Length: 214
Image 1 (tube, one colour):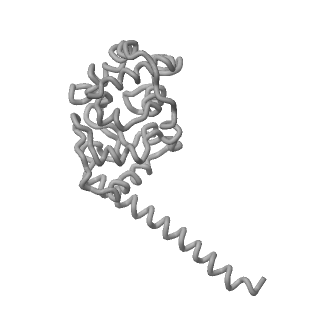
Image 2: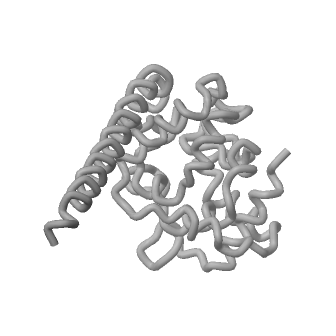
Image 3: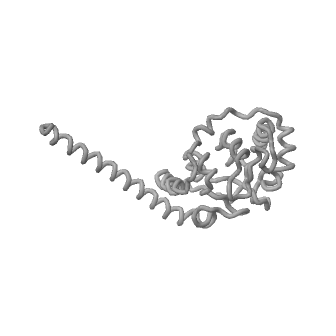
């Protein structure tokens, strides 16, 4: 055994060093992300990314972070959302944007399942029925055209291309079913929900939402 010790111990030491360096790099990226967030995002999304109803959504919400992919967050920062108060931040570049995402992920309290959610089947339904549900339930917060805050509503602009062109039907379906804790977005599936919509009725709403993209 002794003749191998001079080979084993350096390898162990190298592995320990590699793990330590990786941890330090992650911590440094998160600290950079926090700094960048405070320089660019805090004015709308508030301290701790908690958001402000009627002004900017919460980015630290547990359900949101659970279903939002890094690609979705990065592309939203890059492109902004036309027709809303969210401007593009493409000037930051990918590395800085990734650092902000790393910082936002520190608020995660639920398993990250965006891959599973985005892999759900596309919605199929009747947009006419979906419009009825949207007008009677969703428009109260999101506006009759899904314009969100710009129309004086308390909810986000779920009818805008900046949202609909970046999210999957699974993302929309899961959000409608589960809602988002500590926000005005309540779940719409189950006997304890704000409205117990069936899976088909939720898909009807999603299909209708897709017709709003201009």
